[in-house]
Image 1 (cartoon, one colour):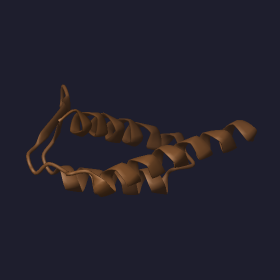
Image 2 (cartoon, rainbow, N blue to C red; image 1 turned 180 degrees about the horizontal axis):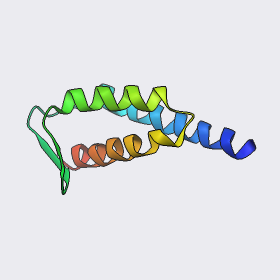
Image 3 (cartoon, one colour; image 1 turned 90 degrees about the vertical axis):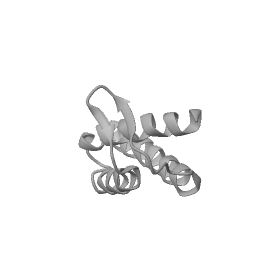
Amino acid sequence: MRGRSKRNKEQGARINGLVDFFKSAKIPDAPIQLGPGEKIIDVKKFVTSHLKTARTYQDASICIPYLNRLEKLKSIIHEN
């Protein structure tokens, strides 16, 4: 039980950090290539849908791939 509670807090902190970043970040209008087979056409919609999914499933491991993709996008935006 404690391990799960700790994971939930960590995932909640990751989500909050991403929400804060994307609130102030300049979201590009152009498509972005995250990696092979991972091209984002509508970046704003991607961010909105991924954050919503991560929040909804914050207590489950299903949100981890969504967080990972958001963090990858954050890194790309931060580099540019």
